Amino acid sequence: MHSFWYRANAVLTFGVTMLAAMCTLASISDNFNLPSPSAEVKILNINWFQKQANGNDEVSMTLNVSSDLSSLFTWNTKQVFVFVAAEYETPQNALNQVSLWDGIIPSKEHSKFWIHTTNKYRFVDQGSNLKGKDFNLTLHWHIMPKTGKMFADKIVMTGYRLPEEYR
Amino acid sequence: MDCIKSFRDVKIRPALIQLLNLGILICSALVLWKGLMCMTACESPVVVVLTGSMEPGFRRGDILFLHMNKEPIRAGEIVVYNVDGRDIPIVHRVIKVHERKDTGEIDILTKGDNNPVDDISLYSGGQLWLNRHHIIGRAKGYLPYVGYLTIIMTETPMIKYALIGVMALLVMTTKE
Image 1 (cartoon, rainbow over the protein chains, first blue to last red):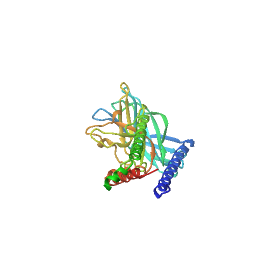
Image 2 (image 1 turned 90 degrees about the horizontal axis):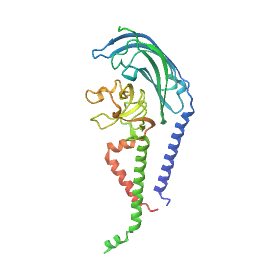
Image 3 (image 1 turned 30 degrees about the horizontal axis):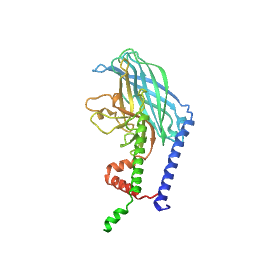
Image 4 (image 1 turned 135 degrees about the vertical axis):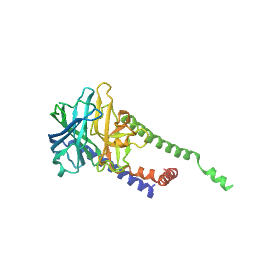
């Protein structure tokens, strides 16, 4: 009854159960954090804007992203993945989302940032619909926890417009 | 004669009960897995991360809990996808989405957070986008390290057989 294996099994089971309970509680505690992040994205320059040989519009731009995401961090946060996407509608597509820049914020100390960058990923449309196009820039974040549930949300910034002519 | 006598001594009834217990154990594990499959609408509700392409967020040996629902896939989500002609699913992040107005069909481009370039070179020849049917699930939850055991077991099968043997022996010999 009280053999070595019986006790070893009991200790192991208890240990795993406690660990699972602690992970669950840590993940639940994330829900009590009500973040209030802020972000601002400015388009400093349209570097070039043209139609590719295959008929798709492509644009290159310089962005300035400033953001304060410090309120997203809790004790269960491993890192926050942040990216800026251009979002727009075209006659064929109900939604186009093109990621322009992304980054990993490893800790709360780095969560207030300011970056000046050209688009890291190509801004290519499916077709030729970008002339004079109104679009949104959306700052998305994805909170990756030490354990448990992942959270994601965004700030939508409206009122951006591409030039009427290629350049 | 002694040999036959020792065979007679084996009691059929307790042995059957032991076997039945083992069966119940296996069945309940199966029920749990299939139940999870139904709840998450996912072929494999739990996956083990095999590569470092999503580091430092996900490391090799971490596990992800997947979910699949009717909601449209959007940029920023971490999805698990299968490419035609490859049997190992890949866990990467969606960076571009184009959703058609008339059919609702969706074109997706993915990239690993730790990779320098997007995944087009991973897709099968000439394929530029992933579509809805390539996606197996979307990652919702995360647990570190737990999957390492399965990695060890698939890479050195000897350990797996030894572990199964020891467990079978324990189940057979336990008398409660």
